[in-house]
Amino acid sequence: MPKDEGQIVRIEGTVQEALPGLLFRITEDKTGKEVLAHLAGKMKLHRIRVIPGDRVMVEMTPYDDRRGRIVRRF
Image 1 (cartoon, rainbow, N blue to C red):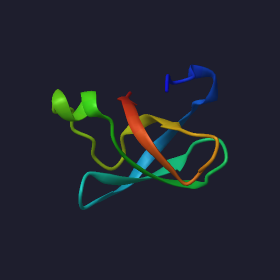
Image 2 (image 1 turned 30 degrees about the vertical axis):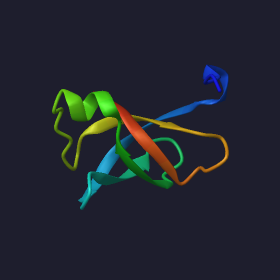
Image 3 (image 1 turned 90 degrees about the horizontal axis):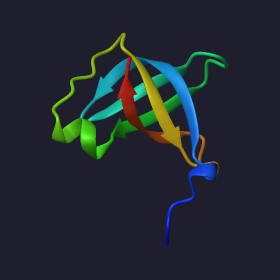
Image 4 (image 1 turned 135 degrees about the vertical axis):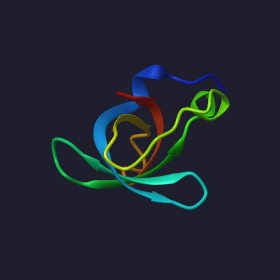
């Protein structure tokens, strides 16, 4: 089934905490809600490090607003 780019929600936030298993707790900049996110495949492949305090872009589906994946570090 092909991905529909129109359904992906992107938010910007700040990494608050690094958890085991490449999970991160992100706080959204605009609303302040917390999201649990993991690193996207390309970020793992290129060994891009994410530490608490970094600003990141997170992709989420419209079905679950508590989980996502980190696709970019600013």
